[in-house]
Structures are given as structure tokens and as C-alpha cells.
Image 1 (tube, rainbow, N blue to C red):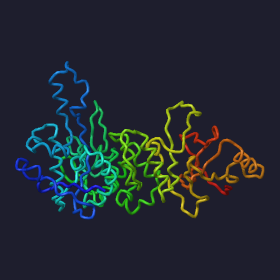
Image 2 (image 1 turned 60 degrees about the horizontal axis):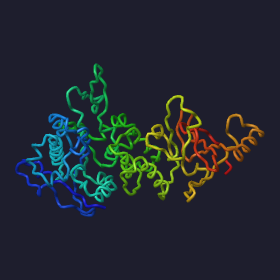
Image 3 (image 1 turned 90 degrees about the horizontal axis):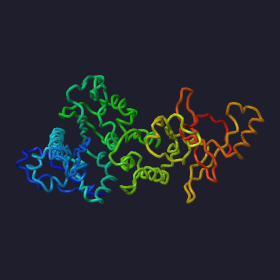
Length: 436
């Protein structure tokens, strides 16, 4: 686990001209010697670096090049090490980031904290080992912080609605239309763990005015994220109650700059860790699910309770796949999936082998509409034993208007292997008796 690199809040709040680079950071602390600290949660400025410019040919005007070069970006650890703070202050691209850091330091001091951790400038991003270790430690760092400062850069400007019914809403104007949206902070991938992990979370607008605490704004946060208030206010106390599918649903429709981060920002929430491999893209989300299935104590069949969306008219025969979801958005409608209590489970857990996933498939011989007589039961048993299509009930259920219903997937045998079909839906049934 990497040592923690912390900013000295009181030093950074001093006059920028009087600061020296060596005064900004405290000594790096090992986990057993970490002092109390505040931690910042924020939306990064995604400015274009010189090496990222597109179309910078000789025919481009000097004015265009300068405009690109001055797009806002975050202050990095290398900036603080290699450039004087006076030069950083004169750089228009870094001005907003510097003010954000100073604002965070001021607020940390107001909360009684001498040290601050900020991901944009406290991690050496040129060191791949440090980046990998920091990603695996991120949830713990947010959890162990004395307080977390959530900075909503898009709240508090002109035209924002700041009242009791929508304290975290902002107003955008698109042409002649007014559209109200929650802060972008609520739609980013990394901010999910930054919302749930801290013991204490405070919200601030772009001018560092305090909006309220996470507990006071729990109902508003639930509306913004779809996460039940009890998990928002006390995730540590209720984490074991949430199924894997439910946790995955919280990540649905959130965005990250890099596709791999969609998997990495779920490490602490689900309770797993694995090597970081940037460059593998969406394969990392599949690898995360494989890791969850192999983790002792995490054999949660709700990981299979997902539904994929298809455009209208998509061929039914093409709606087939393996059991694992291709992307977190497939769990968008799985927020109500719950694990079945142990006493209601009808079979043992699945087993991962070198040939794939092995699990007992229960056979329904009663409880289905139309199979109430003896001949109906014999027909159901024959189809289940010798047919190529079966229903696979999972050890999880979902609450419906008719009550609790077991979730069941449709699987079909193709070339000797079973695959999921009709993966845009799953059945909800009440099963009476099983044979395995």
C-alpha cells in the first residue's frame, strides 16, 4: 500500500509569492502513521495538453494554437515540483485549478484539518506503479479521511436555482430552452466511491459556499443518484445488504474519461482488488466480474441479473450472450434486486472450473400457470430434462407489485454449451417445488 502524500493546508493558503516548492508537501505517511486529513472530491478540468492537440498543422493560426494551449487543466504533482508557484499563477490554464486547491485548503483549515489530499496533485502520474497502487487504495483513503470536501464547480453561478426543493440543481440554457440538471459531479464514475466511502461529506458550490452535509441532503442526493438514502448516509453499515447487481446499478450511466476506470472505481464499493491494466478497455469490466465470482464470500448470483437494451426491431435471435454483463449500463434496471435469505435458497452456490461456470439448474415441476395437473407436470419435466431451452432461476429476487418474485434467466444449449438468450429481459416467477 503506497504512503500517503499530503499537502500542508496552512502553507498553501499563504501568499503564493512567498511559497517555496519544498514547503508544500508534508512527509509521506505510512498507513499506520497517517495523521488526520481532509480529502477533496471534484470534477477534473479536462483541458487539452500540448501533446493532445488535434489539427495543429502549419496552416493553423497562432491565435488558434494559443486558444487551445490555454484551455483549463489541473495542476499536477510535476507542476508543483518543477515550476515556481509564481509561474503557475501566471499560467491561465492553471489559474482555476490553483484557486480550487487554495479553496480546499482554506475549507480544510476551517474544519480543523492541517493536511489535505487531492488526487490531481498528490499522485505521481508518471509512476505507473504509484498510479496502480493509488487506485487500489483510493476507497480506503476516502473512507479514512476526517472529512471529504465535495466541490461542485457547476453550482453557484448565474441562473442557478438555490432553494429548498433543489439545492444541488443547476440551470443550463440551450437555445431558448431552460433545462435543469443536477451537478455533473453526480454523473461521474470516480465520484461514486467519493460519495459513499467518507465518514463525513460536505458539499460546496463553485465559490466554496457550504451547501450542506451529506446527511442533511440525503433525500436530494437519492433523487440525483437513485441510491437509497440509507446507503448514502451509512454505506459502511449497510454495504452487506446491497447485492452486487444493486451496486452495479449505481454505476450505470456514469461516465469516466478512460473506459477501464469504469471497473476500477468499483473496487472498494464491491470489496475486490485486481491489477490495473490500462489499454484493455471494456475487457476490464468483464475481468472485474470474473474476479468477483472467484472472490471467497462474494458468490452473489445477482451478478447475472442484468438486462441489455436493444434498438427497436433488433432480431430476437441475436439477443444472446454469456452470463456476464458487457457494461455497467446493463444493470440500470437492477437497483431493486435483492439476495434471497439463506433459508429460502434452493441449491448450493455455483462453481468456477477450467471449463467455465458450473451450477445446478433447478427444474420447475409445479407453480407455473397451465401446469396444475399431472400431465402438465410430466410435460414440464420432459421439456426441462431433454429440451435445449431452460429457465435458470437465480438465488436473488425482485420486489414487484405482486410481491417478491424470483429472477429467472432463459438459457439455450448451442453446440454443446449453454448461453443466455433473450438477454434484454428476465422472468419473474414464484416457484413451488424444485428438482435438481
